[in-house]
Amino acid sequence: MLLIARGLVLVGLLAAWLGSSRAAELVTGEELLKKAEAAAEKGNRAEAIAMCTQAILSEPRNLNAYALRGRFYSEARQDTKAIADFDVVIKKDPSPGTAGLFQLRGWLKFRLGKFEESIADFDRVVALVKNEEPRQWQRGIVYYYAKRYAEGRKQFELHQTVNPSDVENAVWHYLCVARLESVEKARAALIPIAADSRVPMMKVHELFAGKAKPEDVLKEAESGAPNISERNRQRFYAHLYLGLYYEAAGDLLKTREHIYKAATDFTSDQYMGDVARVHAKLLKEQAK
Image (tube, rainbow, N blue to C red; front, side, top):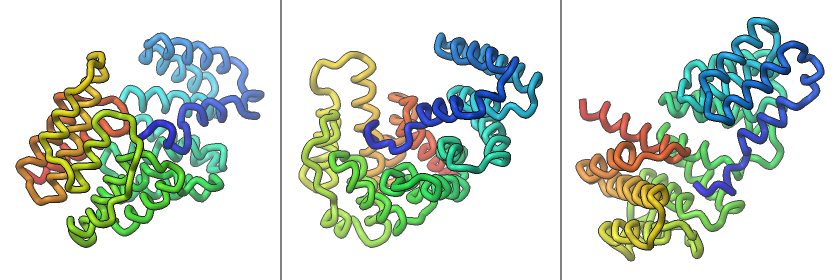
């Protein structure tokens, strides 16, 4: 999804929360947490986690240390450990100030395949943060994997009101409608998008509208002269959405081909990369 549409900016919210009134409670742990953040910025995540652990051992009631360590664990994709740390904070302080932790914990639960628990966390964010519901595109995606397609459709229609130029939102809306009704009804209800600047997203939109073919999307992904990272990103999105297109059409063989490529050959560390990995795992489990 487009970065401008993420709703809660998790790191920013967490940083703001860490700088809240609890800062006055920090004594010896404060310096450790500052050093941990500095270490993480340099890419020394294991060292940062160790410093947070030291802060927790010295001050077991230091909720900031748990929150920060949880963030570092999540970045290291140690999701179970991250959730355990966030659980400690949320149990002690389930206030609006912890909305960022509910949001992040919800996504980690999605990565673990715990879809209903994930949705419950996103629901809590909506309850805690004013005017947040239209921005919850992540909840919409989890609705799809939880097979709650009507709620997913509604979520993507809401998200369109705050993010009108995102092809991905239109596609996920299509996918929910296709599950609820049919591909023909989904195509007829496809949300129009005029200006998603990311290659190959407008061609992806044409594909779902029935105005382009799968090979057109792949060709578009190879267009231009981007750097290696951007080329990988273009190929990733092409294969992810081709996989989803074929799944809606009922072609399991093509679905697997493209989803596996998105999840492994052109993998992404961003949110949609997580979606590809979760989807690939589900396909592999279905194939057993």
